[in-house]
Amino acid sequence: MTERRSKLLVVAAVWLSFLVVSLISTPIPAVNESHYLAMAKHSWNPSWCADDLFLSSFPAHQVFYWTFGWLTLWFDFATVAFLGRAISLAMVAASWTSLAARLQREDSEPSSPRGSVLLSAWLFLGLQAIGNLSGEWLIGGFESKVIAYSLVFWSIAAMLDRRLLTAAACGGAAISFHPIVGLWHLAAMSLAELVRFDIEHSRWRRWLVATILLVLVALPGLWPAVEMLRAANARTSVIANYIQVYYRLKHHLDPMDFAVANYVKYGTLALVWLSLWWWRRRRAASRDDRWWMGYVIAAALFVGIGLVAGFGPRPHSANLLTEPSWRMVVLKFYPFRLFDLLLPIALAILLPSVFRQRWLWLLGGVGLAWAVIATRVMPPPNQLPAGMRADWRDACRWVDANTPANTVFHTPFEAEAFKWFAQRAEYVNFKDCPQDAAGVVEWNRRMQLITKWSEKSFAGDETYSAEELRELVRQTGVRFAITRTRVRYGADLLYSNDSYKILRLPEADSADHR
Image (tube, rainbow, N blue to C red; front, side, top):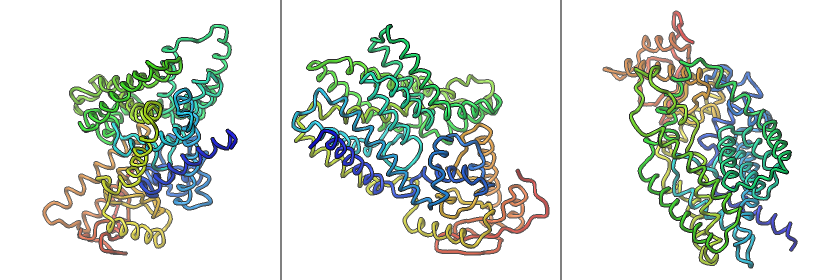
């Protein structure tokens, strides 16, 4: 068997493992697929759900939408999600194989140099299924960060081989697809170079060319992101940062919101990795070891910066504009995400280099099996029960078939992939929060409006009267709603099932909405 064919078989095996775990553990649509693919479709067809708040906000991942959005013009969302997973995970499998093979080159067992790459992939799948620090993941749905991480892996492998132009091109492409993932990679890569500290002065021209190449490849995605940050005034930016960090995305950004168990798991993983790395280094040390160690430690340093910014008293909303905002700015840019993903990757790649593989294959098989069944054993806490989910999708399909295409809906808090199944716009959706500052502030205003109206109207008689609904229409302009079947509304009933009903709201005399 030729070397090339052997590598292709390993890539195929890793890809198949990733794809099977993705499809079984995270059925289509994944939580973010409805978010990304709806925006991708709207980018190519702006008339689709034109009045949706999220879709009309600034498209933060334009390169992803440009690259894959055209598929939504030809195929339904489920098909695009499957094709996207197949393509993106093929990229992850190929880049994983390049990186793992490079790091294991000197230490893999001679009898199975390629087997250790597949084994490391299975070990990683098991570690990812155990949990994470800040909610970061790699094998799941189809979105821009999956593409970006595959490019990060290729960039690291190229950097270890001193192929500067390839490393720069892949790093720049990672920034284009996902600026936050790509920029944290660039920062870690730069610090790792300082650790290795063997930049040859005679090759400074190559470094200059590589830097220019990286910037040029990164610009298509980086420039829109910079423009998005510059678009809002200082007051709006501070308010939006507060909403994102301490409310909407606190489970990803605020270290005081992370579970203690997450810190214990990652502290244990870090100790195991450091111990095994140090023991192996005593047998075979190399400049590549120092570079890789520097890269992982750099990612850990970013976590330290995030912890410094995150721990302590929470900013008070009443004095938000007068308090120092640097903590929110630091946390806004996800300082935990690179290390969150990198530590289990580093450990999974290291283990086959330290222990005999015949024992690790059993552990890897357990990890693969656990990755497949973990979400079945421990489903996400916010997931709808199976019966309600079926009723929700049934109601959405009725909306798609029986309401005008330009209709805007008021949907319940637990609304899941409404635009995906119903093909209609929403007035506001908790999951689909814009990413530009002005959009975040408007999203928060609408969420508060709906919450206050609901609390005021529902109090006492537990019924939304026709006059209360007219007040909602006056404030929002929304004429259609989906609600729980048990809730009583003074409106025309269009459709109902065991869990949900669809209503036409009464017409208001005048409207005061934005």
